Figure (cartoon, rainbow, N blue to C red):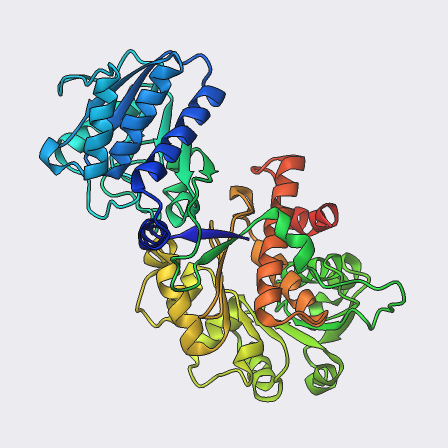
Length: 488
């Protein structure tokens, strides 16, 4: 996992390095400039004429220093300063002076960003918190229209470092060189689309200034250490028994997808409790699974199970409500709640889980909006998922998996953000496979938070494997379930 910081958290780390450890800020600025110079020389070896756009804050100081270092490396780097000289920070004013003493050229205000091989954006940085307007907005639009490759210093100007939102307008960078730690704005959309490739440069700043746990990013390399162990002496009972309550009338596919995903994730035994009419389809599609009709004695299967997953294709009929009610009144073990089960709970507020700490809920933004009873709509939740995820998890006591382009996993104390997956996963049944994966991991003994995080990461990696094999346009949820094997 890697840290994903807000602007305030990054500034706290920076200040701690300066105030408590005595590292001069100009040294940190020089190291940041060296990182930008090295990235430019490595990634854009043919860029000879370079425009560096600097603002009056410390991001601009990084830009002045980088321009000087590029000139010393044999490139022709010119600076366009935008702002007021008397608003420059002390460090930026010093770097501007050093740049000019080394023969650097500061261009007239009316200079346009045309005719250059490369543009370096050092206009605002991570501290920006207001909408970009006026001459700053005009310049950003001109940069984007220039057709020139862009390197952003820390974050593209106009992207909020805290939530990835676009503050009026923003630079579209091809490469972003950020300092010390990645920021939330680099990975949350739409900001992630403006950053291009992101390089995190070590400039000597540590995490010592953090007062609270930051959001952590889940990456491919984390999966192996999160999966439950396998033993050579195991039998099918060793790896858990999952009861999957899914698949109402005409919805056998949801049950099949969840069941296939559960087995691919390593569950020992899966019982699919579904509408009787789905029996042949389920047993043909997932022959390894046990089939239990909805008319069967649910208590029998609850006594058998190590974990329960409910919701995929469940529907919202009276019979679905009866099943869900019986489950929630009697089951206190590991539980995953998805899809129509969430919608039923949103419309029947008297329904509640017996053991929230062992419960994972997996809403998409629309379902989340219903759970929040109108406190936020789906569009607001999609745009700012972190703002509602933590408070909901903390108040409910449950682990929340808020699905989206960057799925949030949180228990209200820790928050993880999944950095895998792709747009091809926006397809019917994708959420059903995730339910099967998380349920399987809970049946194998992982706690709710660990199962949710591991499950979301595995799901995203399987989606990436499916996209690599058949393209994001053509992949289906079944391909995601089957690609779990390739990831494993």
